[in-house]
Length: 261
Image 1 (cartoon, one colour):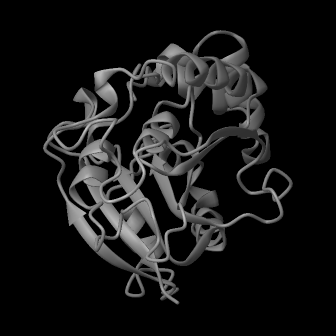
Image 2: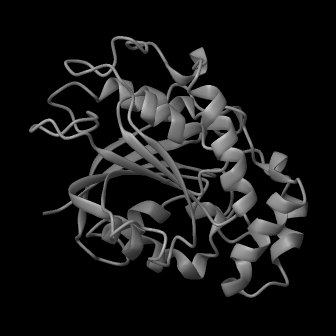
């Protein structure tokens, strides 16, 4: 997500934290989504899904009893990662606060699912023989409009097996971080995983945002040894991706946290 920092900061600096959702909706409604839109799914997410999605691995799209897993992408934008996760076998849901964003995501998905582009895959199996050992048909794609911290957008208090965070935590005011962690845990099934592409790691956390720097923030929020001390999840992976969007190359990190039973 390539942020033009001056424009974004000016959009939010005079808004109350409770009104930030309106700020993001305004940016969508005024055609400024190019400030962060990358035009394709995250290569780092593609690679980690393909590298850890064999039948015994944590990111396989089916449970051991054959149920297709549900994945959620909060702040999904035009839905690039939602479509990619569907093509890799997950029932994939995207959440956006903006009605304009949801409409654009639906239009993108309708076109992309008809003839998926190569950028949805890395070096693993391609559509037609994915997911491994299971039927190759894709999962569902659905886009939801709502506030991440509210509950009215979730169908029957739906829970997820995988939630992906990229440029979502960093877009939230730091005072909302503890609520972010609590909400994430409430959305995950037991043994569900939270996949975080940590960005921007290069930015001083004391500088104004969005985006706000997140170096050390995920660990502090989610680890039992962090500042919250929640103990609700365990970090399973912490690696630097070989591929990621250019703006985060060399500094992005991927972490995977599993919710404890």
